[in-house]
Length: 129
Image 1 (tube, one colour):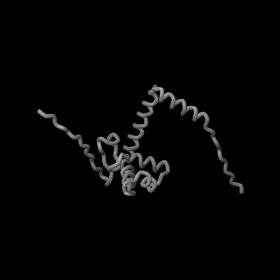
Image 2 (tube, rainbow, N blue to C red):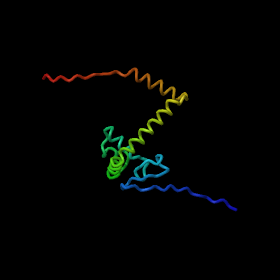
Image 3 (tube, rainbow, N blue to C red):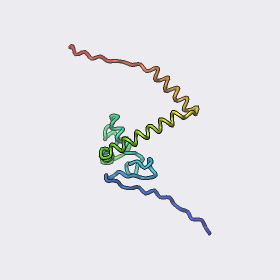
Image 4 (cartoon, rainbow, N blue to C red):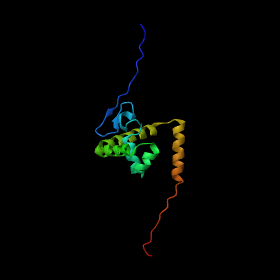
C-alpha cells in the first residue's frame, strides 16, 4: 500500500468586518488582516503609539481600507482584545523573568545598566512673557 501525501490546508474564518479574518494557524487565533500576519491589536497599538493610518498603510503595504477595517474591528471588540493583549504581555513577562539562559541574563544586565544611565530632564515653561 502506498502512503498518501496529505496536504494541510489552513482555513481562515471571515469576521463581521471585511478584510479581517481569524486563522487558527496565524497569531494564535487572533484576528488579523487577511493575507498578512498583522494582527488587529498591532494596528491599534501602532495608532496608540502615534502612527497614522496612512503611515501604517505605507510601511506595511496595506490598503487604507485594511487599516481602517482593523481599527473598526478593534473598537467593536476592544474589551476582549485588550484583555487578550494583557494576558499575552503577562505570559511573556513571566516567561522572560524565568528565563535564566546566558542571553536572557545578558539582556537584563544591559537593560538595567541603560535604566541607570538614563538622565531625567524637567522642562519648566514660564508663563511670564
